[in-house]
Length: 314
Image 1 (cartoon, rainbow, N blue to C red):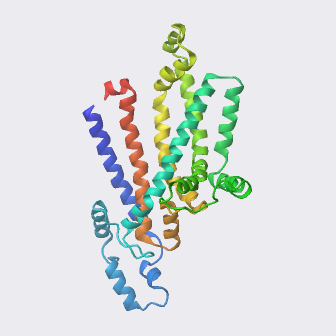
Image 2: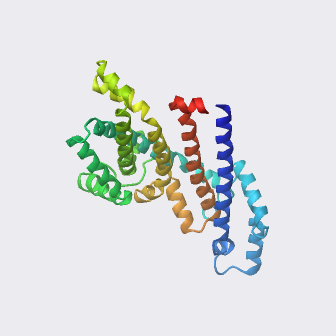
Image 3: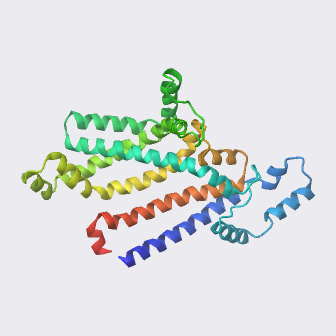
């Protein structure tokens, strides 16, 4: 068990290190001069040279990478060229919005997908199963940004039940929740469709096992068998997809936040790319990549918790 966790932790650290190298290399080989972007086309050569020196752009690439990693480990991602404030402050200011949206989307995804997936497995080759499969295929085929616009047209423009975009602020909790309802639905629908199909397939595989037939023969109700015996034993593939989906939800906020004009990390990275704000883009790309790697690491650890056979081998 301890050796398993040690191996996974070492792999996690090495993966993060490799990701940081790729992110830094890609960000620093892009065409363009950050100093010229900041000062404008009318800047003199002396001013450009002084700013390059101030930003450390004249230092060797390896030195700049080591300094960036060391500073990042201390929470210092540099100064934003666009906002003229520390990048860390921008991230902290907007992180709550993105995390709230991703967590809400994950909760809705789990509620919809587990219910529909288990229900479809229980109604295998019946109308309920076909209906879930059709709806899930439709959900996978619909792009999130297009679904977002349809939701705005229906619930904001026509019915006027919910705001079309913007964020009222956390000072008014009810207004904040209303602002997040449509973005949460837009995020959750596609992920629910994928997870429902995986849940159905995993549940059907478990339902063919002898212990399920024994549980039914002993007099347990169908619902009890499904939720107490089938679902726990089908959790390995489900947890795998859930971990990947949470990472996808966080990164998917880049599109959703721009559609609904929400002040989160997704909108921040879009603005930073438009302004060629290299320190902010670099920090945000690394943050999103770290979230994906961390999600996979957590899933690896959960395998041992939910599957005793893996725990014995670990």
